[in-house]
Image 1 (cartoon, rainbow, N blue to C red):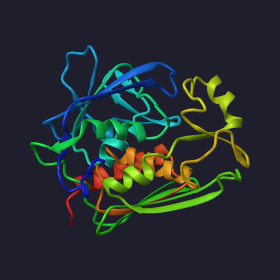
Image 2: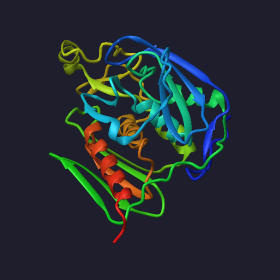
Image 3: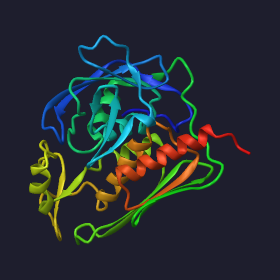
Image 4: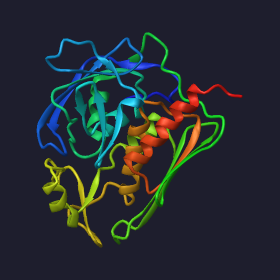
Length: 285
């Protein structure tokens, strides 16, 4: 059993390198990921066979793309980064390098659990420099898109509240509140898998998306039932939405705030991350 950090105040890197391989959700192509210890603060990314030094991942590299979070790194794009980033920061890592073959992070089982297992296999060790400064918040932030809304309110500790509301009876309205720690992330959020809807599968595939989606890496909802039960939690969908949010906040850091999201999306999460970054750069009056 891994002894995870108690909170997100200290700096941690991996004890050794570890790798995983799998198929990308949207491309359907195989890719390899190696996670490496690093002396550099933050999450850095390099590409297999590329001699250029690893690039620091930043919030301004994130693009709002269909059904996943994509990074634009010069002439390269890297898709579906959110589950891996959530695992790295959720487990408490602050110094790590990702080495990737291809342009999409493998989906694995559709959750962050396989990434957590890889991190546990490698082990954590104290990093050689302090962790990046977390964003500070002087006043509440609110961002909305249609009926969807996300807020960040200054608080003593980082906590998340997720609310979803779907017409499909198998999901319906779900909500979850969690004060995040590495151990709670590992046990309560990381195992939650991505989910989709049976009536959208053909349309998405025709649009060139979810080419790697399958019943072993995504929950599929068909109205009042799931095509591939059992669920890992009765409220697995809202837990996965919180997992996505953690991944989308990974590059800006966890604010000392309560973050509440109603009917969230990667685009909405990304808007909040950008606002947190701006708020941290703006001097208090």
